[in-house]
Image 1 (cartoon, rainbow, N blue to C red):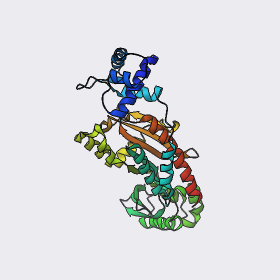
Image 2: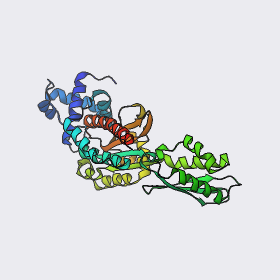
Image 3: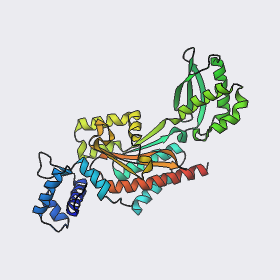
Image 4: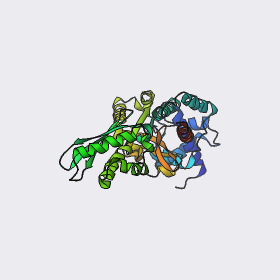
Length: 345
């Protein structure tokens, strides 16, 4: 959409002021605080035009204006320049991680905590359970004549299960013999290191029936692809003016307790893998509980294999420039830490 430079500068000033103050912004405030070279009356006229275009809204109780979701979208896409993380914040991040490298699980939890400490918003880290767990044992339980339940237990106490469609000729004892032998060979190995090539090499040591064996392994790998979620800063929401409304805060807290909903939320931006950092504003997230919130997220990967996502969730009145710069740094830092961690195992 075409917008002249003066309107752009006024919209940018209003959004920056509102992000800082959480108060509706008037023309006199913009004229006094920002050197735009135009009078308060001219700014007032431009603000009226911006409201007519859908970039600003006027709360009923105030003469000032606040940005709309459309205004934030234009700001993020066309006006914003990400802020580079400060040297002080880099020290906080690096110092936070220095003594928290005992396992991958702790690395991800630390990522969520340090992000919430810096941003004062809810932070979410979603990682494949392949990265955070080692296999402890596998077992089959009976379901009916044609199916069994494969149970996969990890060293972190996670229990995954999936339905296994067993060949008619296979008995539960046949399946548990495979499970015992797989456990013998794979116990203690990180799930991320278990590959089809590894399983193929073990085949002759486990069972003669190739199809029975491969179906069992396909069931095993299904349990690896679930996501582990780490959260930080949930209570920070209570300090935001936007969440003084108890019902609104309760709805968001309820959402954050539903791990599947949050995982679906983070996996909802299909184009995010191709971006450095992606931003979804208001109802772009397609969840009624967070219509007044934004989600800024980055995907971290290793050799083009997606390992997970890091995200900041908060009110639409967020410090977009700072958080986008921070997430870009954190994504790179996290990838470096994971590479360093695996090199030292």
